[in-house]
Image (tube, rainbow, N blue to C red; front, side, top):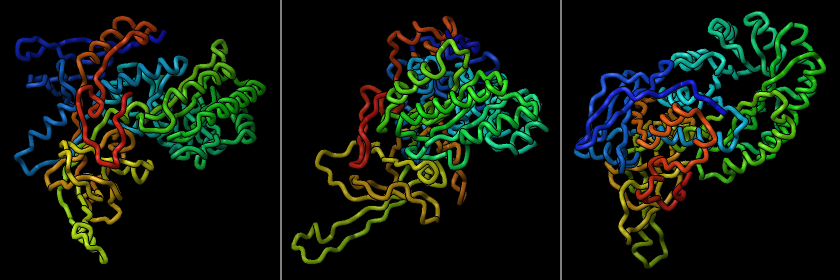
Length: 501
């Protein structure tokens, strides 16, 4: 049984029409301290660090998107914004433990360091994969104890190793002799995890080209660690972000077993296996989450059976946040390009046109995922197109003065106007965390929402702990924006189908 120490308390009330509501604080261990709460039409309330909207029955995250768009309909200030459904993060957490009951998630903060996401996961009892002093500070600032943090960067600055030591963070990864010597000087009581290389040739973003020791090198590193009197507690690996072959996990788990055996020969009592990340966060992928976990579980049972005494963790990032965030962008400019075609008697063919749309977020902002995460984004129309509306070849561009700032090279959409909106789904992973303000364009505001069933489920977890009964019962939670039941979206011809998580 997984018991959540972080409890949820209902502390304040808010009125909405004839009903009395209790929007509540997630107050255990100083996790979500929300003050100055004021009622609004949809029970919105704010706190010191972020604001969010408590959704009443019948309201969805899509309603918030529409509400925000309507609020600025008569204004020229139609800035891009996000709507993030924190209930979707909760749903992913429940799904994780159902699919990987033996594996404790340590959320990869680098994927999305939004304070609301960090606090929700902290409240749910998740661990955290941090790669820097700043990420450690962020996680500890919301009350996460050091034993729920792994400093999972094999190449660390000495001053940041010392910061980890001074703040009680002991678990950290390494993959070289130089790193061992740095740790021996700066944090001799560290609990070290040897990161091994994997075959990540079938991953979207390969990581073993930069990190990981071979099996041959691993033995040498274990011997050197023994000489330095360092404590090696386990093995980690990462099959690459956007893994497309689950068998990669099987080989990596088998290799980890070999390293555990090497460690035992040298006198190490290793008890931690970190299987890294690579888990999809949306359903518009070829390899689904459960298809991966159905391969991982038998491999874990084979090489690290439940009675082996080995604790198993993972470092999911995009899994938790990708589908929770929807980005709304506004068309700020438009260019019509006429393609003159000779040799045709059809006037419509002779004057066929393509459309260039310029929106107020781009690759230097949220769409940096196109450059750094190999993302392929697809627009969804906010307005319903007419049944007989003609579609045109279109491209979508960001607002900066850089010619590289192109979001979509080619897609088919009806003709839109300046001031119209486009939505982009599954925008929670590797977007806001790496967005810049290049050319003076500000990052989009994030509006957080959560439904009443999600809050109630959190309260149930508080009362009962995380038990099989909580997992197995049928719980209906509204899904993020585009996947709300009863809400239609109108995709462009290049857009993916609706997603049901």
